[in-house]
Image (cartoon, rainbow, N blue to C red; front, side):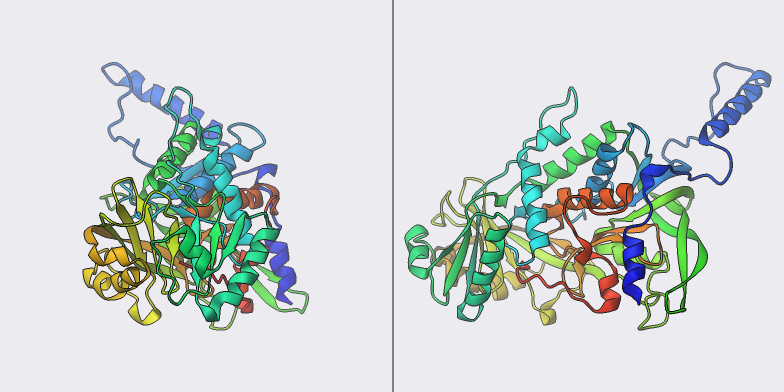
Length: 486
């Protein structure tokens, strides 16, 4: 019954056919009226040029075709592709609202910057294949006239995934899927593993998969700043503030079975300014929820999930912040320059950092071990008890490592199936999602931004079909499970 409604919602409305964010008159008419008022005031006041008593340069515009909530790599990627794919230059006015203008708590800058195609779902594989191509040709996409080229510092050392006896068959099946999608990956026996990487202890390893092309790690901060610089050059506006309210209107529709459903459309976004009690209302046609770990809270502001339990109206966006620790250590006798990004059977992982025998790594906690996400304090005991024993067992040289630094960051964790949420909400019809990637949003951001822009501008996915990532799966109970979450 509902699937037809969901298909209708997923394919609705092309933004490119014409936007109107005002409810009467045009922005040009309004600007002319303001200009006339200024001239009249100036004519009766002593002095020279018009000098407003109140500086409004820090405020967002009163009108924007698209408001993107969240200025991390996913939000910036959506902004980039909206401007790149618009039919006429300057046709779409885009505003990005970001509350942390320093990005000190942003997931992007606190991540380890890995990118891989070793996933079990074709959608995730396709997203990462495009994204690595984007990164390798970054300056073709993000170059700005008269600015220096970007150096993403992509290190193509590959991913090395280890499987125990009970997971070996799953790994074999996953590699088949990866090869069908064009990924260059090989399977390795414990003996082959020891021959290629003699620093590994293969105890408990039955099989390994090793990425031969397009995998490794890069500088997340460079991607973030490169996207921000580029979209500003394309005319995207930025505002340092927090979205606190959505103003919407409602209408009723009847399903094929005769059941009534209430549809909502957001007309106005209220943005609270940084370090102030004031807010600015922004009229808009489309809202993109790319608020990362806090996107669930943003969805609640729009009334999503506020209905009776078990109904579509009562289905929440199941995305919440989950804290993850990253540790930096030094080990003089550690693995050398050929070291891949290693994901152990124990859920521990590490990669090389720079050229001086430094390494970054951590371990995904179990549900029982999940730390309090209320702050970004680091638990050093977690490394001693949960990370280091696994590292030292897998790489004997790490028995003598020394931790030099540590920090924590947030995953936008999808508690339903740990996969992304892409596309419009079925009832709040002009809110689109780009969130919930549970740790792999950074590496897939270029492709996800393109997919969301395609939906907004054309009403359907044009390049990669991400229909399985639509919001409707939460109500229908259709999990899209990825077996390779690090």
